[in-house]
Length: 352
Image (cartoon, rainbow, N blue to C red; front, side, top):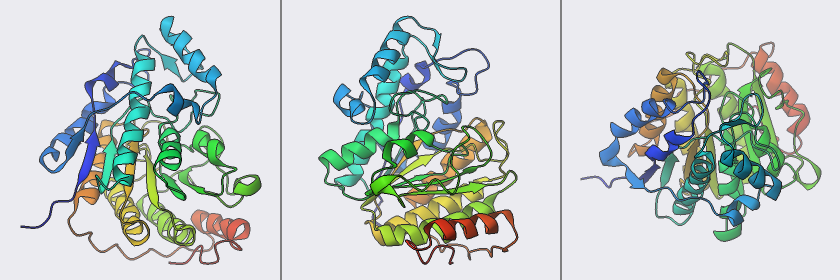
């Protein structure tokens, strides 16, 4: 009998207690599709309980004013923090549980207690900046987890891969001046929140630690795989991370109502395989994945199923051949621009 891979999952019914206005796309029902994908693989997964993040953990990446704002708004709930972002009576509790789950999952992977894992949390987090909740996000779950790894687990070089269809402005801003956290994002552009251009490459000592691959509306499986194989892989091989955190949004799916990419379940499967293969090559397979967006039940179910299958596979299937990139195509132009911005740091960027 083969050795079972140790893959953890965190989910909890309390994540459905963060409730917004009727018709809001970031709604509790999102987790039904996610839960179905998890339940079908439950015997192979190790369930972990969520824990609320402490003030100390949150305040490593957020200003105290943001915590006070969310505490006050929750007491007076329902409240809107901006046109997209709301709080209900239990939102502070639920948001703490989301951030704490991300921390504990990442710690378990860093300590070797798990080989990989997935935190099926809400609200999402990657738009939340140091002092601002926005884009459905209250606290930046991945950033809170990343800083915990660096402060407590001895992780010196951290890679954050964000394949949500919307650019993770909050994560980028929190780490953009830090040379030891590499933030890599694929996202639709133009699209909310309007950031994520190729020229955004970090700041000060962190120049070169932000790599954005904006995808044109209509891009799909081929473009996502190309971006990961031709940009992420050579960049990560130079950076040599000790652990990979993934902000896994599934709103690049072709059925999603909030964007215009055309990724399928197979596209998310290949993306998951690429990132797992990269982790196995560079950091002992250590991957911790945190749910971000995804607003079509089909996209969430297909995407989470594909992700979990890739994490659970005893032997990773061979990756598909890297598709060619035509110089005049939208992605070809983006890669050429990336070479101009980052080529002197990452000379292999753009190669297969």
